Length: 300
Image (cartoon, rainbow, N blue to C red):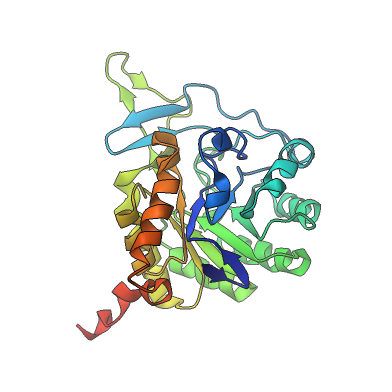
């Protein structure tokens, strides 16, 4: 059992937003109720068709995706997807995205009475900005968004960020505004060239790079945040493919670990990790394992 902000999770394994869709298709392959939680695909105020194909490119040690936040919009989500999510016997986290502060706030108001435990504000999708910039680089905008979101939200607010040179500053501003936790890290930016056609493969050129290659980057980001903000809850993600990967995240301070690319490689991976972690924690304390790798670091 894992307790975060007063909510109990069966285990620390959840599905990251995106690869699992809104759960229906994935539930044909695994029992989602065996996991600690499920994060729905990012929903926006209006329907988004996503980016043109090709959307997925395999590369060494990972994949590059260019999905582009394809989703049905909040009205269809509430009517067609939310009932299924709320029928699950596990914790639901709702990921929301927008182009403006008012769009995020409208979504929170629409979803406030759902059974979800947290809101996750997606501030860092690399596949939607027209100018390769997004909200995660503007600490003042994040401060204002979180501050206003906390005024109306009935649920804890997490923000999802990528690897960023100014990550500590951004998280500090979010904490000042009242954020309850962070999700680290979103996919990084990546690109692949078709050398036969001598052109970029993805229509948008740059996509979101995820998988085993970004695990050390994710671990470093969490390390830097946890040592500065010891008590801030963290959902860790980025290239987790087995329980040993998961333990690395937990040992540097992640309270929950989210599986993203791993679900696309093998839908059974989250269940395997949850099972293996359960066995591991028969002989060790989960609570004492969180952040244990940081203990004494500065005494060296």
